[in-house]
Image (cartoon, rainbow, N blue to C red; front, side, top):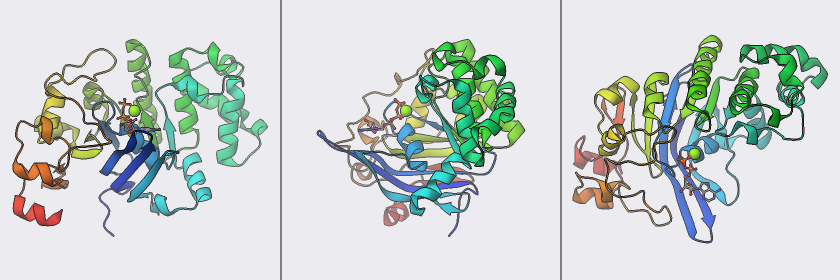
Length: 330
Ligand SMILES: Nc1ncnc2c1ncn2[C@@H]1O[C@H](COP(=O)(O)OP(=O)(O)OP(=O)(O)O)[C@@H](O)[C@H]1O
Ligand SMILES: [Mg+2]
């Protein structure tokens, strides 16, 4: 079995949600991979499946959702085949996650110190009492005053402070991979920059990889080594950040780079006409074809696979490669 990334290799990942409206085909063959210590950005419009991708990698998709196909190899383990207790160990140890709304991830009725202690205790299999020195050290590391924060309730912390706590908790177990789902989009712009700087500094110090989900191409440019562009549950392009900005290949990526970011979120793609498709009844073939200025007959019926078009640069689009050969591949 050949892996494209030594730390993480996700292939053919499909996730559906069974709702009263019908089956939402949220992910339809997501591909991405990472080496140890690398930073991968996952970008795309709202609803394209960024969060579902990260939840599926952590096997946290809940009813009415279901992982239907795919392979997730992480640190030598095939995660979709692990028993639940094995997966639990992965989540509390080698892989951790921080979210957009840090306060909602903390229990409002318990002091922050107890919650940090609990997380460390679980990962290290020690009693909560014994975690105290480590909890203090961790809070110092994320730039907070330990004595104040340990005795606070979550509502007594600002959004930025809460996110610092979450980052500390996420890194307390020295994970190989930290997944950060829009970790700054709920924060003020000045605080956003500080949190990204902190993430950057700590990831460098601890050597962990970061999977960063974001709307903001500016953040990607600053923080990420590689980028995976998603459109409506498909991986449409994967490349080093430098190359993606230099030479975007997928028509959607081109539009994404032209879209003017607003402060905070950049949901609207002014440069690309049309809207994101309804995933209950997605367009056949390439899901981007109804909006694509370069659409060809083949695009309407057949889903283009993600192929390598130059070293390290992959794109899922029939404008590239030998179409005939590609078609036999599908
Ligand atoms: N619990 C759920 N039940 C039903 N549908 C869901 C659920 N979670 C996600 N979906 C659907 O899956 C698709 C992908 O959602 P996802 O949250 O991954 O998007 P996203 O790219 O993270 O968007 P955003 O940028 O707004 O966070 C959407 O169409 C969404 O409606
Ligand atoms: Mg999301």
